Length: 323
Image 1 (tube, rainbow, N blue to C red):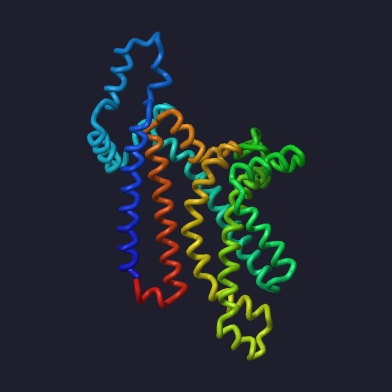
Image 2 (cartoon, rainbow, N blue to C red):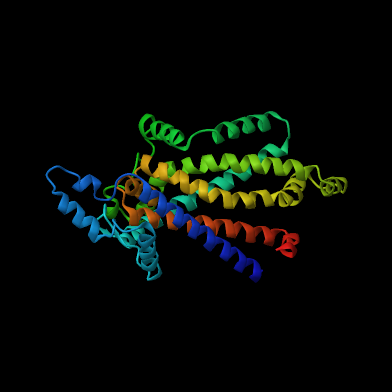
């Protein structure tokens, strides 16, 4: 297990490093720079624009700029945000917990809903419920995340004003009693987390359903049925346990999907998270903030992939011998 941990840690570090290099090159090769919108004006002298670009080293060769950024990162410094006008560390500290909260709730809901849907389908394979849920999950899986978010926003904030249209809390949140603050936070979390959860749950349900079909056709299931085991016990105790590995694999795949979906969902629901900040930073060519957002996203994805591998080895001892 220790050897597997070290190997996965090395692979994760390599992936994060490659993502950092590629992102740094792409954002610097794109047209414009952090001072394009604020200083590219006829009333601003060219000397002023040149001065500020020189102050921040934007005229230096890309390898030198990357080296300086890497050295700053090694010292624990993420730089200064040009668009937010404050240290990048402060921006990340204020937004990353909100994104992790949104993704964490969506992750738990999506796997609970996806696994529950697949188990309901597997109770009577080929029945009307199996066909109806299969069609629904396939249709939901095909929906764009931003479209589903807009539909839920229109349905449950405008037509049926049950949930807030955006934000993380109400304007009067601090004046509420403690129990109502929790309710207020949950009400604001329902639509953005529900949008992400529905999309991921459809994917989990499809993969879990296929895995259950294979497990139910196994010899061990026929043996359990021959011994007189009740159908719910056969499904939950025997088939489902054997069909867990594909779902564990989905855990590592779900994190990048949730992180990518959060970029759009946070913008639609005005959720003050890292995805919304990243979109604004890209538009403003805020190099330090973009790099920090991408780096943290890559680290989260690498952690999710490593956790999925380790959970697979824990669930299936045969994988430990090959690790």
